[in-house]
Image (cartoon, rainbow, N blue to C red; front, side, top):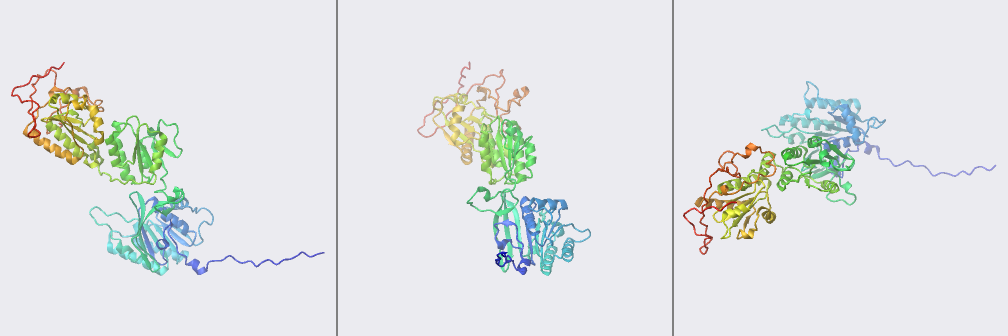
Length: 605
């Protein structure tokens, strides 16, 4: 019987292994993708501190670093309770309920201040207990939220506590990372002096949110014998993960790899009324009952998108307050979108919203698909405009006087100056027109042809001109507005026009006009003009009794706005004086010789 052929197998070699000394002395690193090793390594036997207030970025930094460290010999301490600690680790990729999820020499503890003991003594006692009882000498210690263990308002005591921490790290050869938020300075008191606290540390960094984006500001960071100082890096979140990465200015592959401003950037919160008539709403959008509910839901968001509903003028003040409150409380990474519905928002109201914190206003009748594209285009952006401290002042700048149409010259100057001054804070544009009359045209005919109905639009008469003020109007729109306001061709009434569209030229023109009326006061034509129609939006709120009350013409009188209502029918007619024209130059001729007797009024059929 033939024996089986036996062949000799090649010798089996063990996989290469890292030397034991190198594995024991492996350095822990911060869990920030793309961060240079010189800025991410925790030096053995040294203390490091990251100043960060509670935020998604702080959670991602600490718990991602902790999840990686707990797979080796490390100690993680947090002031949270046990359930929150387990939930934070599970959210960042480490489920401690799974068998052998933690290293055999890993320790996970809840940290509590000890009653009757100073904070630093209780903290060092807890660290000593871990070293002695758990064999944690020479391992990495990560501590979150230990603010209560330090004396922040005593600079000398705080510096001494920092020295004691450094000495403990050197004695036990442990790398220590503190992630804490020092208390803000009390009113009238200087900020806590932190230089003495971390002066002997190996690294000090501030993680903060600036202009809607998280930044990694390195005060100093020691690696071996080198020191890195003054670095400022922008941080973003990896898509679909709670992991931080260093932001770059460009990307070469998918846009998702560029990162997000916050983990909730893909979230959209929308008021039900804003999408009430839409057939399809994306499944990942969260629809809430009202604007107030949307504001409450988004108050804790960082970079989500909030869609609010604009119902009309009656809800303007409430909507302005909601936008301002949301922007001030949630930060600049939040996207605020306002959607018009049955009523279009006027230009100056839209400008007000943009100055108070809104990212965009979706115009009336904009298709829903176009609105979704606009929301997608806002992703990755931050709100960069300065925000007004008090929205009431801004609201008063756009809610002008209810007067419209003809007012006396002195009232005209007072109202225009007030409107221009109040609207400076939001750079609201206005236009002032001086319209020289043709020689054969009387003031009363030109004023009758000027029929203004929009609140804030005013007109008056000078010596040989008519003045018109268009509130919240741009220079490019003047021609269209004039065609709407004047019921006769302007070429039949005026020789031309002089336009003032900036605050300085308007102020100069008003000063010249004021000097002119001081030298030669013009008459009051209000008696000979029909009653001005009440601006839309005011008529609904006016009571029948209010319409019969005359409005005082004196701008200094309390509550005076303009004389925009005709007097009682039984009032006796007043003769219309003829004005001597203001001569433009030596060769100019008057339109009519001044008479010293009253001119009879034209018949009004």
